[in-house]
Length: 134
Figure 1 (cartoon, rainbow, N blue to C red):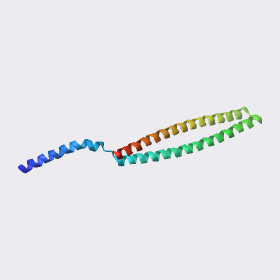
Figure 2: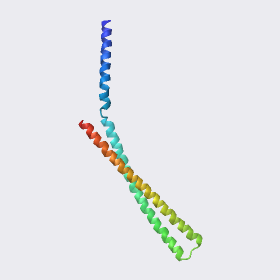
Figure 3: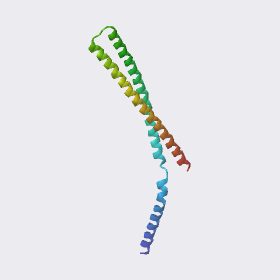
């Protein structure tokens, strides 16, 4: 009986120590998780920058197409093409300008997101360094 009561007291004592130590474990930094998040964030930023590069190439190609459409429109007007053909050429120019504006707006938003993500990544890295030194 004495052995059973000693075991019960020991279990209660260990549980009390565990409860007292749990806030300390909860506040300790999860360095491996933080490093993994930083690695994923860096990978995301890299892919976003690659997408921005591709979008810039698309905008350059759209400008090339716009120049071609405007040249076609000028040539058709100069050579006396039908009204339907001129209307179609003007519509092509209008659609290309609209497409370029949409691409530029998307490019601007993506660049802004990369800047914000980079700023957040710098903060996360600073926090991780701070946690390692504490």
